[in-house]
Length: 123
Image 1: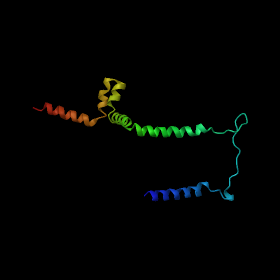
Image 2: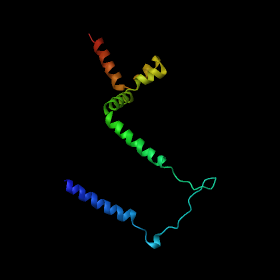
Image 3: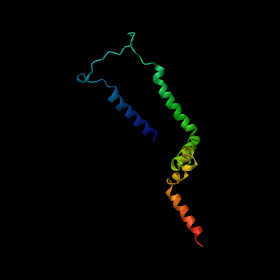
């Protein structure tokens, strides 16, 4: 499998070189445009650290997600629980009086309470 992987990589590199690095035919050549200049007439050149910064930040974030997977997963589970049961958020924002409105968000729970109440009333 290693040999097959290396041959595949080799063929993909050859295709990449042929498609993207080959010189354009004369009829497809685009005339060169001047480089934009700053207010003082100097040519603007992107700084090297500004080009590498996003790559480094994204690579570090990927590594941190891999290393700290469990705490991130715990936070994501809590977020999912809060999204599925918004009554706690509603009560925190609107106060305890909003519990009736929050109950409307869980009709299955209300129906179960009604069944329980009817069972208690039955002699």
